[in-house]
Amino acid sequence: MRTLLKNVDTVVSCDGQDRVYRHTDIWFRDGMIEKIGPLDEQPDQAFDCTGMILYPGFVNTHHHLYQYFTRSLAKVQGMELFDWLRTLYEIWKNLNGDTVYLSSLAAMGELMRYGCTTCFDHHYVFPRGAGDLIARQMAAADKLGIRFVASRGSMDLSKKDGGLPPDSVVQTIDEIMADSQRLIEAWHHPDRDHMHDIVLAPCSPFSVSGDLMRESAKLARAYGVRLHTHVGETKDEENYTLGRFGMRPVAYMESLGWVGTDVWYAHGIHMNDEELDLLAATGTGVAHCPNSNMKLHSGVCRVPDILQRGVKVGLAVDGSASNDGSNMMDEIRTAFLLHRLTWGEKAPTGYELLKMATMGSASVLGRSDIGSIGEGMRADCFLIRKEQPDFLCAELDPKYLFGNVGYHKPCDLVFVNGRLTVQDGHILGVDEDRLYREGRREIERLLS
Image (cartoon, rainbow, N blue to C red; front, side):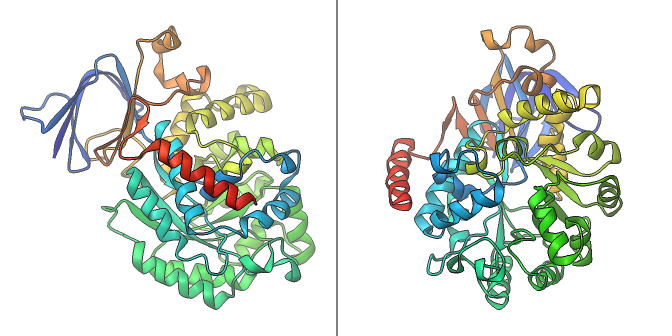
């Protein structure tokens, strides 16, 4: 299948040379970008992109899709992380396969409407008897057509062990390892030609044991899959690891073998210079989650210092219940304003944050074939029409649109792996009215 995007007004490549193409054609073939410019071939399908700006698809590096069905609940507003988690676990322990499928469909659908073409999800709540929740997430991703990296998250410390979750959502190390191996063998694809992948992701230092972390790392490295967990999110976490292990969170991770080019942490807020130097030296990455960090009063990630050291950093929306949205355009704007307020002239520019959400995020996930526009890259991109009042003056330099101006309307066109998935702001192949009705019923069951 050969697809032509004809006469694209502007292509913001986000590549290593920061190239911007004007008034050009983009050709897709078999899920890849075949050519930027004219090609003496006949397309199987063509789209007139006159007056449109094309960007590489956003790559979301940290999410909890199931939380989409517990957004904006009044009783947890104003809480900080530990109390927030304790309260919501009493709802999340009632998740089932339908909750996970429908919330994944809704949350990833929102992501994709606003330009996200690759989503990583950190799912770690596995109530007994809930079924194969990762398979339900994969089915939702296939329905949408989004590129999806799932995680086999885990928790083995419940309240009785000094952790936060109830007994019904924790598992033994043997159970977790057996299911992790099963999922890796079912979904991990080293050749990168597939739309799915799997990561091992024990939840956090305060909900998993050191033995679980070590065994997860051993299994992941035997199969060549990546590792992910929460680190450096709050002072409570820091006090927990200091009190329990006599080490700060990053030192604790290092002691367990959880640093390296195959590891990335969510948040990375409360880190000192020595710890950031360690991340840089080991190639360990960070998923920056500004909206969530602000809402839960967790703190401000030291993004300028992270970038200055060359630490791999990507952007993420985090769990819907700690953000209340799944919109990477909005995340870029929030990050731009937050860091401008906090760091002044040291803050990253709007374009640097766009690259963080694309090429930077791809690097965090270990991908060099997504996150920028170029021949031989995956055909993951979105287009928006610039000939509208919202673009006046902003159109002069579209690299800065999302950070400086804060554009966040649904995209006109979204392509994932060369396939059209969103047109005129609507998800193709999904009955949005039906999704709303079924989602409402499932939320009522969950909250009751």
